Amino acid sequence: STPICCLPLLLYKQEFSRFPTKAGRRSLSRSISQSSTDSYSSAASYTDSSDDETSPRDKTQLNSKGTSDFCVKNIKQAEFGRREIEIAEQDMSALISLRKRAQGEKPLAGAKIVGCTHITAQTAVLIETLVALGAQCRWTACNIYSTQNEVAAALSEIGVAVFAWKGESEDDFWWCIDKCVNMEGWQPNMILDDGGDLTHWVYKKYPNVFKKIRGIVEESVTGVHRLYQLSKAGKLCVPAMNVNDSVTKQKFDNLYCCRESILDGLKRTTDVMFGGKQVVVCGYGEVGKGCTAALKAMGSIVYVTEIDPICALQIGFRLGFFSGLLGNKNVVTRDQLDRMKNGSIVCNMGHSNTEIDVASLRTPELTWERVRSQVDHVIWPDGKRVILLAEGRLLNLSCSTVPTFVLSITATTQALALIELYNAPEGRYKQDVYLLPKKMDEYVASLHLPTFDAHLTELSDEQAKYLGLNKNGPFKPNYYRYNHPSKIPLNDTQISDLCTIYLQWIPTSTTYMFSLVQSS
Image (tube, rainbow, N blue to C red; front, side, top):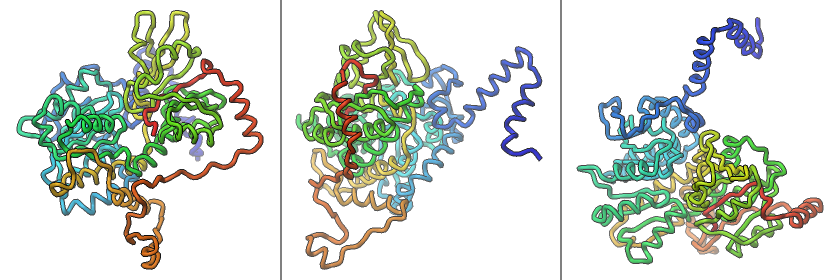
């Protein structure tokens, strides 16, 4: 019998020994191309061009129930999206556990949640959990490039009103947000936001609706900043929960998620080798720490810029070199882009698209050339080319995927924040921005421990009394900082290498530059 390992080669020979005609070759090419996208996997979402170019806004689509209250790329992809969601559920056991524990009580019964987040398989598990807990949901995307079309179709198929597709225009983006909010006979009473665009839209365009919102949950540093601005100006008339600064979000999503996904996004878009490359990371918050650790581990020579002296001191202990520079707007300027070397790669790991001054690149003297999906050459008059990824938007979710388990932590945190705000008795939360209670942070962590077969040690009564703690928590005060493990001490060779890097570093010779919005 033929060994299994030889079968692919035999099939290859059988297929191509027929010498197809020119027309046959074209048909075969289409067949092979189609088979590579049949599964509509996460990766296919980012490169698939088989769909027609008709805008979803110009299509009339119905799901199997005959309803049309949605706008997605292709509702026929729902079955493939369902498979994606089922895969995500396998690594989001804590969120599924929360769903099973609470769905009998329906703690979100009567909640009408309008959401604006990345629409991925992991987010779909969150949305379906909210529905199982009694909520009605309408959803749109916070990023024009991060939507997984097949997942949006799967959600629309089960009756969730989704208005999103990958590759929206700016006009589409705001149209989708408005369609979610402005529905006759339906008025939201809760907001789940990522970036603050949805909150801003409701506040500006529908002030009467905004005043009746019972709570806002925000997960990004950009959105949280905008909420604090509203609060400081006395214009925030509803309570809001800052999920971004919860311990479980900061220490796991921001750090570990970005540590893995930065490499994935760069590899998928550029096929670059990291060893020996000079990298500039702008900002050494949790995102910066994760990206720096990943790139350094791959052999890159990493430089970090920072404005916060405490973060800068951490850089000095961990990398041996630092320079101070960061902001949440125009972190990478046109002047710096002009001075970059030919072939430099520029990308953004922050939420907003303002960190890199992309607008300054849209001028007559510069030529834009599309290389592949989410990859552009920006060509200077002298022929220099800079590779810009995702047009300066969030790299990992625009160009690749992110670790499901880490997103389970964030999604569970968001679900609990919504439950807390919706069910809080009158007077518990005023018109201000709040952090997630520490007890809830600890509960989110405890739900994920079984994944590692971990079992908590319990304090004795005597120990709890000595420490002045409740045996069931919370175990740390709000000001406590959960530090990362100390780095292994550098040996003589590593110290010598760092000294060499320091002496040879020239700002204009950098090969990469990453703009990170999370600086603290």
